Image (spheres, rainbow, N blue to C red):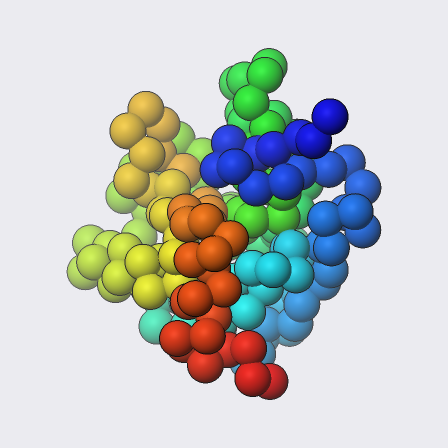
Length: 155
């Protein structure tokens, strides 16, 4: 039986099975574990987030990606972290459930940056804010198209 996270991507307890690897974020000391298929988008998003929103610092150990687990509070829905298609950034500054952790003038920039890379921002969740969280919000086909359109697959 193939497992899927709630965004429809293949999930697994074994990161190698879904090609999860660690990727360095340029301009930081940080590495993020995510699925190879989405890595170009995640890496560039993190790089720009660090440049334009707030610095990412590997010293806090509050930035992460892959984790095989359910959505918080759920017993039957796999988190997008379980497919390597979600990341949490500067989690200690932006705790789960807390609203308004970013300066108001940064919020439109966060949304625009997430959209550029095919991501959805957890700050826009309706039931429970998760401002640290970003997840792939498009299909594998659209991910490939975005990578090509943004010139990220040519490295």
